[in-house]
Length: 235
Image (tube, rainbow, N blue to C red; front, top):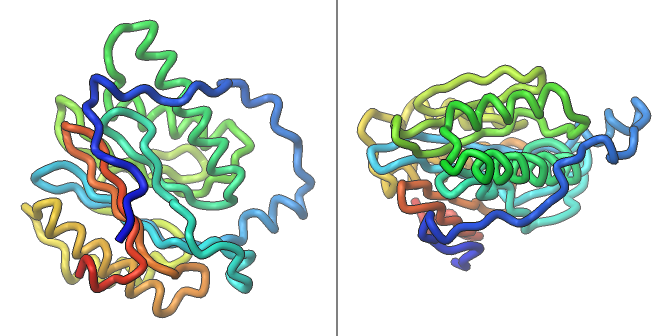
């Protein structure tokens, strides 16, 4: 097991400074956009009694046929108490997160308060609809004064809240496992095992998913992300 990021005190967390401008991104021809959109993945988000657990596989692939990277972190912290998955093209997803972080930083600097999860999910939906990011169906998980939240964001900008959700090319297999193993009142530790089990099931059948699992725990204290090459470490 190796550690990608550590639990941080929410008062000390400062997002990187990125330019919020999205108009500088180069335009893509339709055929290039189709190639970008062919990447696969499996991402899972679950609300718990402690907060939220998000799980993703580690594989980057070209059209689900060639493994281009075996160690991709597909979940990133975007807020002191929220994380977002990367789905779709790597460059598009990274641009999506950079711009979303910048907008969150600007909002909080202007207002002197942290953005709520409802506002953050709406902003992410607006970015998905209006920006040339090719970040398909990310999952947003976060904790605020209103509770523990998981949102699925579709490419048209739709935002759907649920107790648990799955996105990516391995979703059909992962959903079957999640439907069987999920129950109300899971702790973060229990949810990590359930989420990892769902990703593992998808890895067995989906060529776009594989090579291990990243698990993000989100609580009112912050975001903790760890990678596991061996599923047995968390099952």
